[in-house]
Length: 267
Length: 287
Image 1 (cartoon, chains in turn red, blue):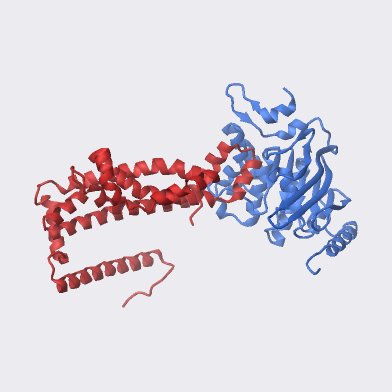
Image 2 (cartoon, chains in turn yellow, green):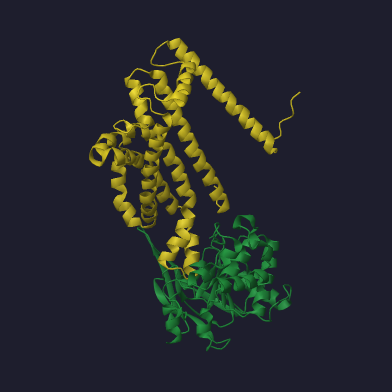
């Protein structure tokens, strides 16, 4: 009745992975339902309640303030993009420089090692207090994305094939040309990988970033719902954050794949 | 402006101030073919580690004439490549001078092109863009780059791969790109560091023959490091044979006959026997 699975057939591979994903998600829902039903704790709603809440949220908006959920998403996305943009602007030149100049790397290594392990959530009240509720949350996301991005770029520069630099020197490249024509393109796959990792961490920070946010993003909505005891709505917010995260990392994954292939450097 | 200053200062275009450093061979146009172009004097390289001092290259001096292909052979690990890297400027010798014409070379520059054993091509560039790399850096205008790279693509049999990426090429094709990338700059001297060492025997022979073909069309000064005596005999005007570490010059042989040579020619066989016997005597593996 079934066709024989053919590993070399693109269509077969796609159907196979689709079936596995669907079964995986279905199993997840069943497990969720069984565990929450057995717990019978109103803090952990069963999936059916959460999806009803999500449906209502998407259709009618927030049950307390009456705001549209899209407003929340827009605020969160803006915060996220600001944080991401800032991280990129700072981590890119700094990472290339620290990767390339050994003495600077050695000098700044202690700073990075001291600041990096501090959880972004710890920065949230400080940033919101001193930079306001516009820039503050974006800075929390920035901190989350900055370090994985920076360390990936530094690592990438150090991994550059020394022969590329030697070849360029014998072709007459100046220090500046080495940097723009070799170091920068050779590091692109690592920059993209850093972006992928950073995007994941960035979404982890969004709730922490928005706890103190007066303008409300999806993270603040989540906190409000928990405070109001509307746990199904809180879980609906979690699902929205997860989907946003999946979408951005999906885009990053795709871009990184295409660029790496076009540059002949897929790892 | 003297010719020497042109390399350092660069030659300026009429309308903009971009600097170009290709065609450094023109700077030595007044040196006739067969006259000394490159002089290496008392080259010494010593490595210091915490425990000991290793002498890698011990007082090597030789000259390379314009238009000549000189091979350097020697027992494995004797420091052949070290000598070449010193000439390229990628490695600073402990003492000694390297001169092209009457200019002392200390840092890498486009007057000494280099071909690497593992190709050292840029994977993010196409074949054509790899070949044009040096010209691009020298500020040569796009149309001229195009026109010149087209000629090298043709000469190296790479025309149909012009827009391919490096990872799509075979090893032999990759080294054709490497050679074209060095030659297109018209450097005063081309340094080849075991360029065919990573290739299989058949590809090696084919590439040796195409190198001979290119050299017969356009005379170049080349120093060629190899561990293959046969390769050295097939390609070189002279062969410098180095001793085991610390490397000194054992003897410099002149190879008879013009290129292309017959690999089985009896004069070469006699020379091959002599060089191989010496290398065997210098083999440290069974000491």
